[in-house]
Image (tube, rainbow, N blue to C red):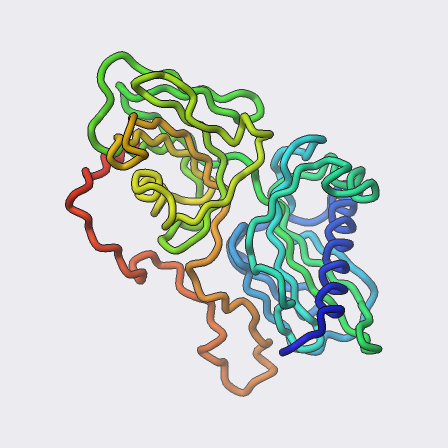
Length: 342
C-alpha cells in the first residue's frame, strides 16, 4: 500500500514519541507480569507472541477502534538500568491499526542502537530513558490523524540486552582466559605456547535466544587480541560500548563460522587461525551475541480467527528449525572448527 512521504514521516515521529511514553511508564509504574517469552499475550483483542528479541507475531482484526493512548507491559525487564553515556538497544515493530499493514520505511525487528545522551536522544527524551531496564517487551497504541483520517498506530518494542545473558559454561583448559568487568567488558589473558591451528569455538555463556543463521545481520559486542604479538585487535567496548551490527556472510570466515548456530544471548570465545582471519596473526575474540535480523520470512501480522472462516497457511510465521535451512557447502580448504562445550 503506497503512502505519501509526509504520512511516513508522521508515523515515524509518532513511533518515536511512543518510545518516550513507554519508557516513562516502565520507570514510574513498574507494572506487568513476567511471562514465558514464547507465551501469547492478548490485550484488548491484540495478541502478541514470539520469543523476546525476535520478530513478534501480532494478531488483530483491523481496523482497530479509536481509543486513548495506552502502554501494556507484556514482559517486565530484569536487565541493567540504562545510564548516561551507555548504549540503548531497541527493536521496534510498527503497524497501522487501520489496515493491519506494517508501517513502511521501518525495518521490522531490526536492533537499533542509540547512545543515551542529550545530544543523541534530545532533552525531552533523555530524562525518561535514564533508569529504564533492559529485557522489557511493550505493546503501545496511539491515535493519530493523517490526511484527515483518524486511525490507531500499534507498536511492539523490545528493549534488548547490551551484554550476554544466560548460563555460564566452564571452558576447557589451555585456552585464553576471559574475565569480565562489572559492566560486562571482557579482558583476555593469553596462555603460553603456540596457538591452535584450527578454529576453536568455546561458549562462555549460553543464551537461549534465536540461533544465528547464514544470511542474517547480527548485532554484537566484541573485543579481541592477536595471539602472537599480544596486541589489541579491536573492541566495541573500547569504543563507547556501542553494539555493532554486521552481515554474517560478509565477515571473514572464522568469525562467520564461529557465530553461525550460536544463540542470541551467548558469549563465545573464538580462536581464529590466520587463514580464517586476516592472514597475518591468530585472532582471539570474545563476542557477545545480542540480536539477529533477516534470513527469515517476515510474516508477522495475522488476522484474528473470527476474521476468516478458515485459517490461512500464508499467515503462519516462518519456521525457526535450523534443519530446514539450506546448509552451506563445506569448504574443504578450511580447517574444521574445534567447538568445545565445557
